Length: 285
Image (cartoon, rainbow, N blue to C red):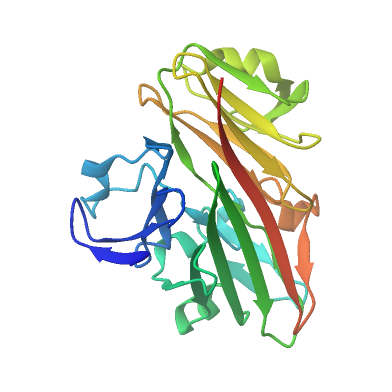
């Protein structure tokens, strides 16, 4: 079977591509979390398994889903156009809720679904359906997000993924496609990108607005990981958590607090749907 339910090394679902043998692992009840991606026999996604198995700790690894905001809000409050106020913790609620999982009909991947509940309506008063598709292609993981607004009013949102990727070390990495300037989230101030990327061992948290794709080149592993972006899902956040041998390379639609500032804010009309796409490609050097 392409999609199997397993209990080891932790309860999860395993999808295997019939042609390549590449695999993805998912735990839908833990925020629709993708916990693994094996491409060409190499595990691309980082997961702190011991921490994952301890429910008292936050997850470090996999690909948490960020919705309906990326980052945080002042006092966790979002003023809405009709005078109401939404109450949202950092990165929103999607990463902590149970999702539904099914295999795609074409056999190339899986679909995760999340819909509004009484709990989400209390925090964010909109009816919605999120469909998150992961597809395996030769040397690649393709991501398609479809948001359906089932409310009678327009729905403001940001969307992002927070994937963690294995690296050989925090040294010996190169980056391609990066703009000269970035936003340093640690100080919430503009900074020189190249200067920030020299601080991986100290810990970085930066947002860039690339022209197209951005790549992480792991020289020791002889591997390039390219993140292909397309509007409006075209911002990238890079984050390290030393001494972990991982780096997050995250696609976001908008910067922190974009639903307040209006910078890259997305708004979906009542009854409408919107698709977002990105793609990760693994290449040898």
